[in-house]
Length: 323
Ligand SMILES: Nc1nc2c(ncn2[C@@H]2O[C@H](COP(=O)(O)OP(=O)(O)OP(=O)(O)O)[C@@H](O)[C@H]2O)c(=O)[nH]1
Ligand SMILES: [Mg+2]
Image (cartoon, rainbow, N blue to C red; front, side, top):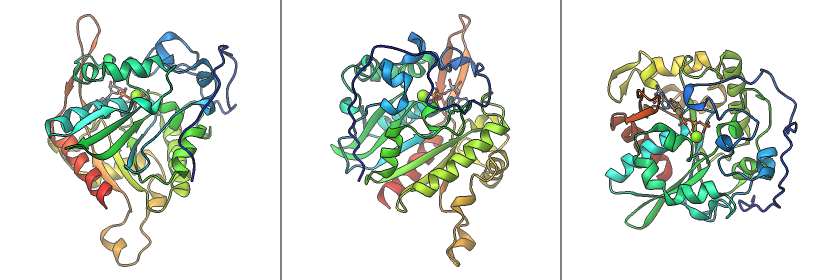
């Protein structure tokens, strides 16, 4: 079983020319407005987000610690700007209204990660804040524990999108810590984010095709008891909504399959009778974290979306946590 506790020595030097691979496909370009200053590979105070110099230079040096190996892990897997952080924010708000406790796991990152420490201290403030950047800038690499009446239900992991899929280095392998999670014995639910074709300039058709390839590879290394949920985020940017939380699911799935060629292929159900009523062995859910409006001072303001979206997602996650 892979060990989910890593240690590393901290180097103070940052080599701006260094890169763990040379698979650059596109030149770096700016993404959606909220990420205009954070998508570069060049370390700046805005995009270091608490990682050490060595970790920034080489994601394979990243140190994480998942102490609780018994409580299932929900991994928010997605490209940069696909909405992982805001999904976490939305789920936290919703789960708290349902009597769950949602708290950061303080031991997840080493003590030198000041961003993580501050994030743990000001988590409630960030979760309830109406300025999207307050969550986006801080909540980037974290582990949450969800409990009810003191009983742990699941842990939710979010990491920087580039670690899962880097649109400009689409064939780069996963950093070491993600491989360790893949190979660990913890029960895992992979929540794979997808989004419409017009919501993320970095995810053009070429990038989406590479993303689909990456998902195919991921599937081949998953433990057979791992579960997969496809989360179609930013559903508000599509025509598939009938009413809040009620979505033309078949059309939405076909849209994903067209936009990300081959993404569902490895999940085709092979079992003869079951495959006639359940063609794929994953769950599919449409999601809307909320609405984003620019205030006069250009601050991006967040308004939570309808409760039906987190309710639907939680119902599926609970089913997979227990099943
Ligand atoms: N229209 C729409 N936009 C959304 C939605 N959720 C997120 N966004 C937009 O996507 C941006 C990025 O969301 P994040 O949650 O920060 O994305 P992320 O996956 O955490 O990105 P990284 O941390 O860079 O990997 C937000 O600032 C919003 O502008 C949604 O439901 N609908
Ligand atoms: Mg994020």
